[in-house]
Image (cartoon, rainbow, N blue to C red; front, side, top):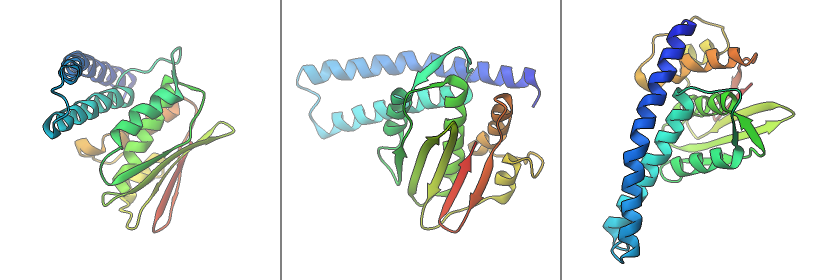
Length: 199
């Protein structure tokens, strides 16, 4: 993917997510008003509220992953953690988040893309972990039965050409390009129950 295509794809991603955020915000505000009026305590309203919060978090996550990312802008690690915590609070995947301080938007983007790659290895459930030590980030996926697509994972370390991907795998095409723009590269190793991605 050339630079023009990358920029165009990021702009399209940002535009879609930006236009979805406003109506989702309105839904959330409406639910809060219903809660204040005493109508928000039923199981149905709780389910709707949780679904709206999940949708908001996923849109923000996808905006980080697939939208534009300026090196001049930073994101508090706590804010990134809050988005991730909402996305992974239900379902079969648990999140162990260990970042602190601030990260630039491009670094936040590669963290999210890495998580989206890693979660594909634990379709039956497991734990995703995010840590940082002396400037190096590590994303790990741990589960009882990892599913590793060697073609996809080898492409991250430039050990193989970019493969054909499905829409659910597009992060595998974007991650090495975003890492290269930061002067970083992916190091991947895995066993039967754990995968580690460092950059």
